[in-house]
Image (cartoon, rainbow, N blue to C red; front, side, top):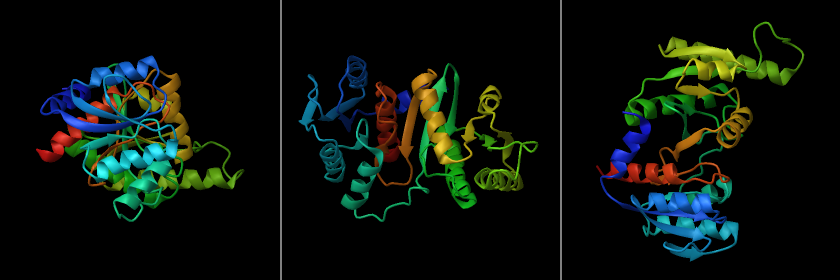
Length: 275
């Protein structure tokens, strides 16, 4: 069973009330919400969209606050961030839920990209992630558990670097540091018995080899790569849930236009959590 089928099967178990922030309701976005309404009773925060429960708010930050309040007050069972800011919305979440903020380099969002029948999880798709060896290990170990427990997939890991062994080492300290971390990270994975291979800068080769967990060299590379695939490369984002938050909080990238799979995944997580 593919991931789309797995998420859909879970989402069909029970319809859930999901909040989503939409500030730019272009036709493609509205169409994706209407399609998802088979699985979710949607509360749309931001713009007015006919056919849905609406909370109209033009201000980006206020829309984030309303969305998190809906979750905190249990007026919705889960949220999809949609088109409001990532960092601000997350800060509001921690404040409203009286939680200690997770350092931005330690948050784990399980981003799943798909094209055709092939999909993979990408780590480090937020700018500040993966900057230290400890951060890479922390995030990857959690994603491996997610893949095995939630997706039923054994990880085939692509370790990305920034310099090949034959490249010009010693020219730029930052590149040497990143390469050193990637090398130690690869050695750690092998020592733990994981299936892993170094691909250095060749993300395309990792994709051609059908690796299912691709670990970018650092977050600022992973973020750009993820967005390039999503917006310019024709890939779909099936899910991007924050893990270990205690609630269903589906993230993503704010300039997406089709939220169907994010909503389906949020409903699936609600049903899995209660099952």
